[in-house]
Image 1 (cartoon, one colour):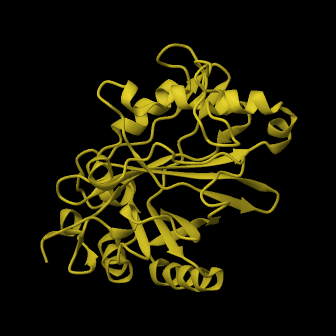
Image 2 (image 1 turned 135 degrees about the vertical axis):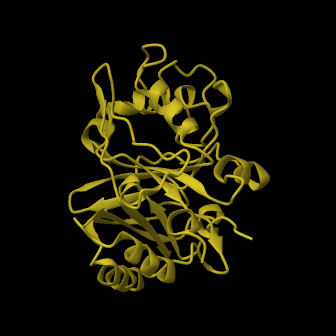
Length: 289
């Protein structure tokens, strides 16, 4: 029986490495996925597969769709398709490096590595802004219901957000709290938070239907740039898409105040296949073993 990739539901690791691959032209996609199947266990490494390899095989995955670019007042949400996404989880940066190198080499005939980003746990689970991340994450059975489909598969929305720390640090503490809708000092939600506060824009129970996702985001740094690698798992992409549309003001014209100091520079949807007998279950793409 197939089940979800274990790393999706586990707590965040101390360190991560995110690998984004494109598809090599005229490559043997089935062979590449067969290699992937033998390398990724869904626990220490979580895999997400994009539209390109699915389409190249002439297959369809119900619910997998292109990430839509969105635009609101002064805000643009980019779409940057990815053929294959790997989330490497661990606690040793050197081990993650060498694991990533082995994966890149093994997949190279079919998948080309386009981006490698290191993530890390900060201050017990806070964003680099100092605010706690994922406060409203579902837990236990609720997390399973939000993130995992009946067949054990999942979908993931991935965005790399770049923070403007100069803008953020120029704000008064009260302004920062109003952007988030919580006090940074104790993580308490503000009773009088403005409608543009992030917690108001993304209150999962305020959507119809309710828009719950399982967030597994982590801070990242690359040279002088840093921010949040936003990772949200769902049994479909609909909940994330509803939240993002409201954030950019497409629902009511109110733009999320989060955009005052941070912007996404990437955006993609991927399908996370289930696991069977310790291997990715790719029967939906490769046929029955």
